[in-house]
Image 1: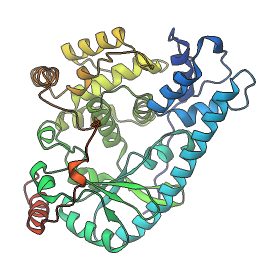
Image 2 (image 1 turned 180 degrees about the horizontal axis):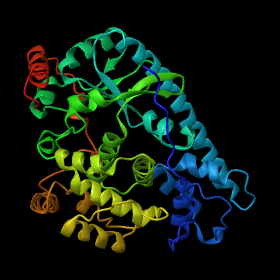
Image 3 (image 1 turned 90 degrees about the vertical axis):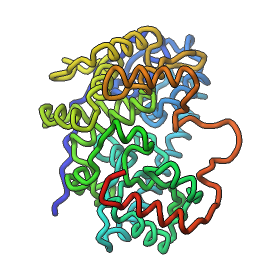
Image 4 (image 1 turned 120 degrees about the vertical axis):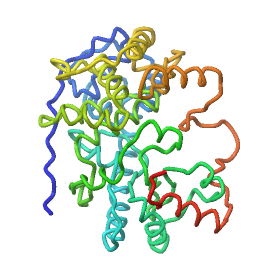
Length: 390
């Protein structure tokens, strides 16, 4: 099968109108705007650097500001150091991906790369512009046990090893470590949480069937098709709070592909329970990145989208150090319709739920505790690989 051909999204070259100088610098960096003058005397270098790390745009900022005489030397030096770190991480990830692809391609296991290098190499104008720290790989759930057995036999180290806890939660992914040091998130479903899988109904068999090979550096690996990529990015961005510039630019580049099939996009969004997530993603991305002409056939998300728009007016993205109350709860609580979204927000506001990406201040991750329960491990694989999708 020939490699797929990447079609770059149209470049965005409209400078940011955000009144906050540091925010303008960050937004211009992801949009590829060059040559803008900024009031550096009003920008705290440490805050800008911290914000660039938070929003995942440090390499893009380093490239956009490189060679400019007006940029504070302290900022330039630290940005270039961060850029070199990410470039090394990207090359290391590709080396680990090459080994992983060699191993999996010798089996009958269906798999695909999602996020990470698939976005850096497949969507962004240059792969050295996007920050990522791990490799996400989607595995056919019916072959999950086989895939893990083969990977472990080839030097991949399990990180999640608390099998009773994994079974109890019916985890949609398992964390592992690749030989060159890249963290591996091995997914059998794009939605990690069991309860959320009842709302966001990604048909994993179809996603893997539609995946197609793409050249990622020197590696050819399967990736999701363009429509599934957009919907996965919409779900991930909204469920994670929708507040990082790197996610907004991922989504913009994916949805702006010239041959995007908008009829198919909305049909699948309805089928996957992602219509509201898609509407919020389009709305927030348009409000922050201001793509020329907006997005074709952009549809509203009703009352919940109105709440999200109010949150954006109240605390616009990108949030900067010292700015509180980001309004993330409106995005993280978005479900498939108004009622379920309102209930999720109520539970979150009452402290009844904790977002799975939040980092606890102390104590070990219970998933990483070594509880070698062969029966729980076997039951987990039987449940995941069963005829009925969990």
